[in-house]
Length: 558
Image (cartoon, rainbow, N blue to C red; front, side, top):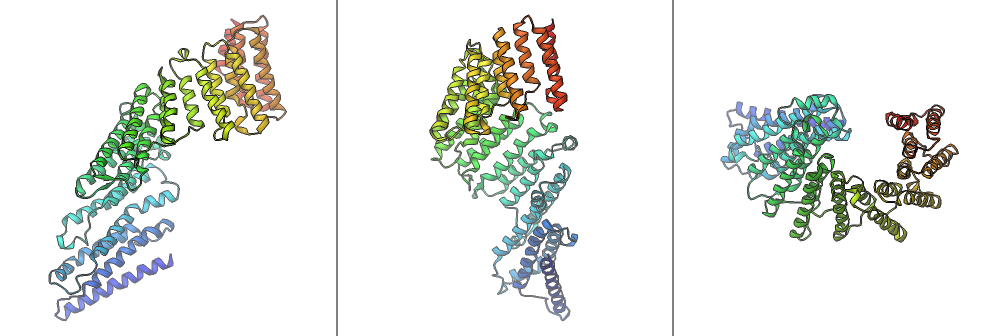
């Protein structure tokens, strides 16, 4: 901090000395000419101070005189004041005019970049801006700096372009990131959505406009970094977190708009107009769009088909590039599988199975999340009854075998639960039998390994009880009661941390409702009292009956 302030002081001394010398020579009847190298050196030093200010401003709340914006203004004023003098020295062929103008231009470009990004970097180091309003104010400040840089460049003479540099790709990208920051999920509160709703132009639209300006402004002979387009696509993908945005547009509008930018970028890549400095940038861009579709829970068949088409497009681009870009990764396949499972279409499970097989062609082995998404595709499918749940169990078998072979994946409780649920939702006559066998299998795994991933949870027990309840026999009631007793006993003796909740008890009531045994009413009333007693003794509201519980009770009493 002290060294930085000292640097600012030295800069002030240098400017004062130049001013005094210039005026002194003028007063003595001279031209006031000073060696051009000294002017250039002063400009370089001033630009360095702007860069210093942008860094110390991050960690210190110092006098506004030293803030990056103030330092940049001083630099601009200094150049504007003396530009005609410098131009004269260049035109008269001053022997020192061959100074490194490229280095001066580079320093000035860096100074503008630091000023554009200083507040954004500060915010990121502190975990974000205070709220959306702060983020918007910062983006607007950066936009003013950007526009000033562009205007000064356009108004300057050709021989002084090194003193009035035009925005380069990094400046456009910096401004895009400033506007993109405004769309971070962490800012999306009720109050911030009211602010967002009042904007004339949304931040992601701003980002798109800046991208298109850059493409028109940058010379056709220069390639554009595809990572900049990726930042714009990311901004569009964030709109799903903002009700003020997505509630005012047609469903799937934002993902489809992001997809359009993506496709345009990839087409320009094939024409040689765009390059990817990092080969993973294209994959990340596809993943941003795929993630948007995976979040659209009402996207149904359309979202699924567009995700599958995007994955197919990735494969084609990957092949056409000789394996250089757009390689689908673990995340890509996970997002597509999630969209498929969310779709609820009758062919969702078949599509999911094909995706699991496709992963192998890219040297990827499915993880637990991939297998689970495929199994859930069955559970959410509109055509469950036409598919044998044994197909879902075959996925569990694959995971079990891989665990046995090299332990690369685990047949965890979530995967077992999905398999049990598949049987529970089917019309299979062996549903309850399978459910109990799978529960015992998982319990054995947990007992043998002590691995908490294998510990049966409420979801697993709920799926088993759901499966049993559909039998409609007195035996199913007895089985349900035995499982409930076991859960209570294991929890009370601290053998497990999994306690039965209202859904567990309600599943047992469902079994009673289906069977209507002679002691059904008494048993139901006993269960309701048991729920109330445990809720009070354990001080656990998750055991208290809810409207579903009372609805099942009324069915038993009727």
